[in-house]
Image (cartoon, rainbow, N blue to C red):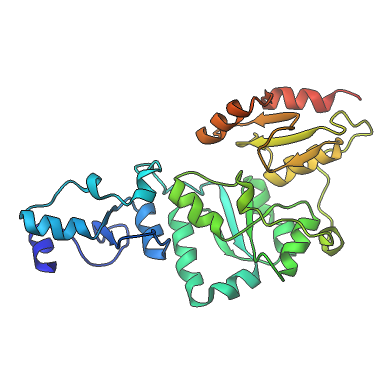
Length: 288
């Protein structure tokens, strides 16, 4: 079988950018292995293993689109994932790095290949207080930690950081778009999270009036000049409630640049009121 593929100019070696042309996966539920994620990032053709046997029987390479795994067929498979994390610093807490074990290096390579500016492991204090260069060029930090027993997660949450489960990486690569708006990928806040936060984060804008008092607000997409953490703090400093779950009862959905198309469809289906960044800025500039 391998000789048949070689005769048809199918590369069967490693999965780097210039390596194998295809990744064959077994039947049943698609497993999000490192090989699968790297193949998606490098835009390799991914097929079920029956493509190989059927092509061998036919004597020529069959159309791969007919053998795309169902899970991938439901996504925007052909999207370029090499810029998925562009403009982002992806940081894993030390506890999450330890949980990965020897697989952490492979995960670093996948995230780098998907466009992240910086990837590594950092404690909460180093994420909360980024270096001068990171601040100067406006890179957004995305923190990933363990769901339980991770003190760095508690410290980050206590400083108004949203911390994500490790599944954020695989889910975003599979979907072909960043899934930071998916509440199922956010680590829920514990009651003692705010007590664990050291040191306190800087205040972005704090006003004596509370123009957003009591309003439940969700932000989707990127707001110019603001990180996700700063947006959350801005809402809370002005009396609002920053939400991560898209549902009935939200007072406003602030739509920034590059919102997910599925998210927009869901917003329309729920009939939620939407505003843009300019309107949001106007609202917080007005006195109560």
